[in-house]
Length: 402
Image (cartoon, rainbow, N blue to C red):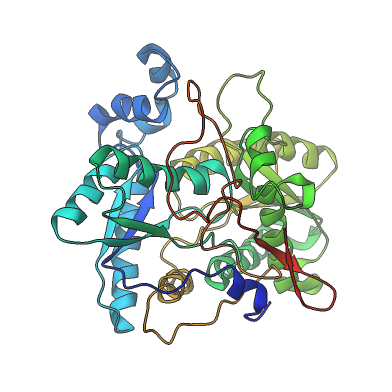
């Protein structure tokens, strides 16, 4: 764990007086009649006909047309607001989505009508990527422009929190319990356990563009490097004695799009086939890339991946996500407090990096030009063009700027 240091402080945004916090998420349907309109929103601009969308709607249909993400976000919103109130921070926590009601633009419009002029966004995504960070910033930049509120309403965003103690801790607890459960099923025979840390696959181009382009990352990707750092920290926290004989890997799930477009691999099901062929006795699947047990966790892991394990004869469990774990809610509240003026804020501590991530992203961070566009969309929470950024610390502990 890294205590607050010069790198974390150099990446910090000056505290502000915020009128509201907005928990911002992907969104999901609330009933069968919502499924196709929701999928149209998700695939907007790609020209996919409804007949094709219906082919991929099965996992929502099987759940009554309801995505579990909405109820989970309602619970997280309430828990975060209660935690902030318990700390004496009287700020409303609202909820906004990219692809379903309540939509970002509607919530921003409502905030402006209520006289709110400074808003702080907390996204339900912990890692750096276009869809996990920059697209949220663009959602608000576009909303401000379309509403004619650019310059009238300020929208900032808390940093990516993959290294927050409260995000890491639930995975440590879950893996520890998962290992015990699988070994309990194996009985006296015991044997080697495969630990698969699973996250959302993204196109290789997006993975390569994650993080500031001027910085270097393991595997040439901030997205991959951050996941590897969290996975290693989880394993270190448990230690070799409890881990026992094991193998581990970072795997991916939920890919979409044309098959000719390369995405991050291996797929979790392919990885399970491989470890089974290598003779492992069981598997623990850790949903490292996800904040809550939404549809992609419930379907892609609890249904498809665990069915693969059953077919292969592998005793297996899927561990919990952070959800509304008290440590996670506390860490989100820390992120908010660190941004609010006049607070005796908690220190910026990193569980698995040399310093916490950027409060304001660099212009060259996670850039993606959408189909038909001539350049990046309007955005918020961004550092000025041409400004150097603190990339790390040198051997003597001095800031290294790029």
